[in-house]
Length: 369
Image (tube, rainbow, N blue to C red; front, side):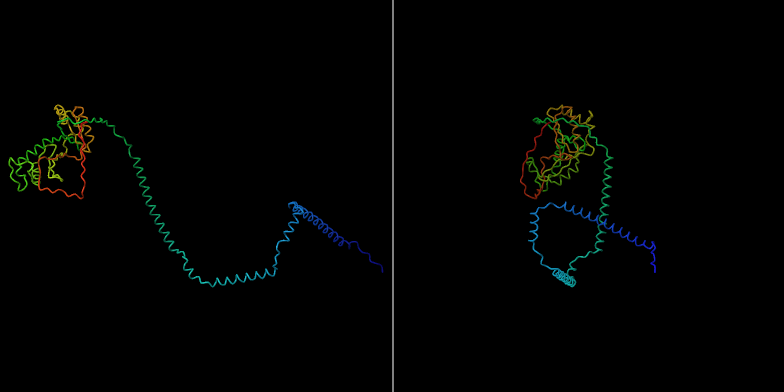
């Protein structure tokens, strides 16, 4: 039997398979070459980065490696120790669960939310209260600033020129004419005339003013032995109403001795003002001209603290007329002088609260300026 001839088309699948396998092998070879090249490059880079080492250094390192102690533990020993540690941890965990924490919990102070809320409310209240007070203070500051803005600029008064004093002693035997300057008024005291009137009127009523059971007074009775009744004298001076249009006489017992002060008290509106003093027809200027014409007369001013300006005007007028003048600051708005020759009884000296050592201070000398 003749052999069947194969058809050429039946060989095609095998040829294609061989081509494919050849291609795959080729690609793999190419990849293998590229990987080898990459590994070679990496090795070269690693080797190039390593520091150079000599044979002696290598042998030294090898010797150190041999001398290091070898770990005698086997993997089985490591696993055994690991299991023992895990068992110990479980045991401690169970013990912790069984511990009584009651005492420790009682010592712990838990946060009380209600208490914190109250504290917050209190703090808010205090804050609002302080804010209200601050608002009031700011309002007061604004008010004061407005007042300051509205306050007119202070204009000082014009300067007042005062002559510098030239102290000099009072002439021997000079007769003083006293003036009281108080309440912005200048009042002529004429104290010698008032004193004479009081003494004359008391002499007329002397027998009625003596103290009770006083011996009869004769021409030989010393004046120092005459004792008056304090109450009778005070009642008598109230009835007598001694005075003039400017001054009223009043007798006042001295607290530290059985004597009286003669007080000359200005009547309301009496005396002359600054404007009156500058009038040539005023009583003050007429009196100054009269005193200048009388040899040995000097003028003395008792100046109360509220009338320094009035004194300066009076002094200017007196200086212009040429009258010798002296002055002093006076501690009261009325004039007071001791009434001589009048002693009353009974007298009880005041009891001091404690013993005080007496210190005598000399009075300043009176001088004209």
